[in-house]
Image 1 (spheres, rainbow, N blue to C red):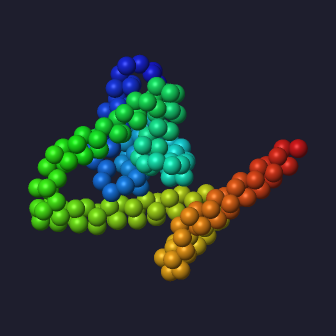
Image 2: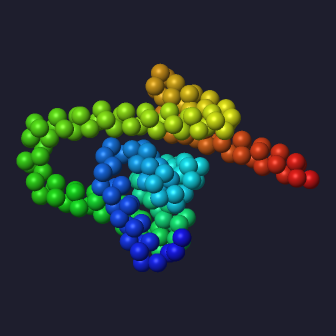
Image 3: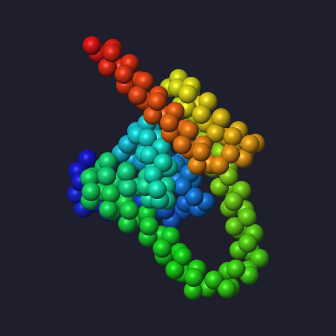
Length: 191
């Protein structure tokens, strides 16, 4: 694919569009990103997209911006990353600027409150769909450790109210251990 002005305009437009219609946090961007960049455009494959999401959620900052940065960098280096970042941060910046001008009217409006409640329900359904799809990909690849970690993290957080920081640290340690073990095994197989 040629990395000309047309490509960068398309990258900006698609990241702007995704960001403009993504309400409810970073995980909502996953099915939209998959549909746009994997299925429709074919710029990346599904495994790359899930890798971007995994890295984006484990780095500081907004997940949507992190994922767009990784996508842009993967597609066109630093220029692609900058274009994707700009396309991702502009919609919320514009929206929040407009809302801040009319905050008093929005805050007291019962219609706006009900719309936001309905959006929360829709966002919950989308996040559940993403979790199920990511678990399906993990099971398809026959990786049981991430599945057990996911179930264990949910149980630890939901039922035992363990601090999320501890859960993240334990999962990170398990992931590092698993990666080190697989790397050692892979090097032994090559010898």
